[in-house]
Image 1 (cartoon, chains in turn brown, blue):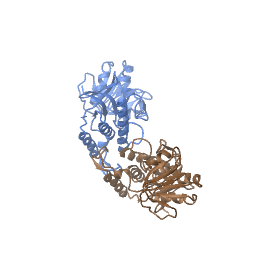
Image 2 (tube, rainbow over the protein chains, first blue to last red):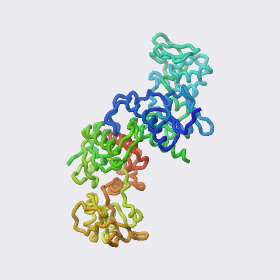
Image 3 (cartoon, rainbow over the protein chains, first blue to last red):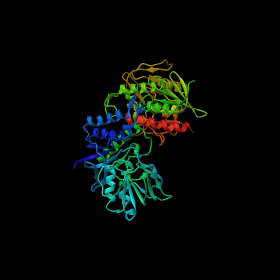
Image 4 (spheres, rainbow over the protein chains, first blue to last red):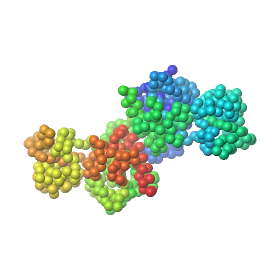
Length: 282
Length: 282
């Protein structure tokens, strides 16, 4: 199993900058993440010190090139879970690999990937974490929303504990085979006053007591919830050293509070690298 | 007299980034400073996110170009003093201009411009601030060390209160005319046990009770001292909004504590701009 001092999750400005600085401080670092970052989708950036004008994709690709020039390994995988091991090590499970590291940096960008229709019912029937809340719904009528590999990870947690489980893909193609019923219609509404009562699709109505939202890929918010990290609305809480409430796990860039700009994210990375380097040299 | 909402002192990454963001937030901003920043002297930068490799001079010039593209006025002046006016306005005196602004940003870089020989006697006969300490030495034998326009500003404060005042240029050419004695020999030592007792040059010895160090151009440290800003060793103290202990004066980059790197300085600038913009919109 590949083993590194530091695993940086996220290929955007915070992740790459962290990795560049750590490598230059002499540490063994790995980058893991998908290329679907918000930077990669940004149109034109004209307020970044040192660069007159650049597309988000070009800046993103330049970051990847900088990491490659320094021979930093990059796994272009989807991170499905991070688990605490004994002896101060974390296990990072991706769709293709299992990697261990002493320190983990969450540079996964903004957590703005919630399902707007579900917002009203968060904590009242809607959950983002199968591991956290699955057991509470074991005797209920439950839906799980999503279609990706990340959803598969959540589904596998739920299918063993919840007999009455329906998959909703909201008009997307399911990335894997399942044994439970699948509703692939587009969702038009969630029903209920205070508590969730059901899902309305274009073609029908499905009474539910609980819905697990597992849309898109794993993001900072859902990873943080699975790890038990302290959150403040949709941001991960960090101390003045950019460390979360779990020792050894750091976070920076758009997944923490503060200015959400490329320059700030890249600066966070440089500071995180210094903080981690100090810890590793102790 | 030119009047702006915000005056940014310093043309390095923090200053330029502050100005870029402020301008794009719709504010009236001016840049003031010399081109002798530490960035302009840096050899090669290879850890800046988004740029593979660039010389300090090229990065510095790119910053100037970004400001010019946004039509931000740039005064390539030496700032000699910043004075608090009534009605929440500051007056910035340079060697060529007087400019007023509601908010001032100090982005003057590292304060590492002290005179090493004088370090031992700081507070014990050596001062960096004529306005602060001149009166204490009014009946003493006093030297002033320097040759620049900034030194002239300090000299003009001292010459009226200290009759026994000698100018030491340490082998540099004096930039202006003076009526006091001038010693232009190279300084080889400062004498004294606990307290300063005199200066030793290549060609003689000069007994002194006090020495005002005013070398090079004005920098963050000396500006801060004149303004009465809170300092922690050689850094300006700022709060979580990057504001100093004087309301309306902000500081960022290498003149505050923290990581002294281009990326951090540029990020500080972006955050300061947001903080100031919020204040101006109140």
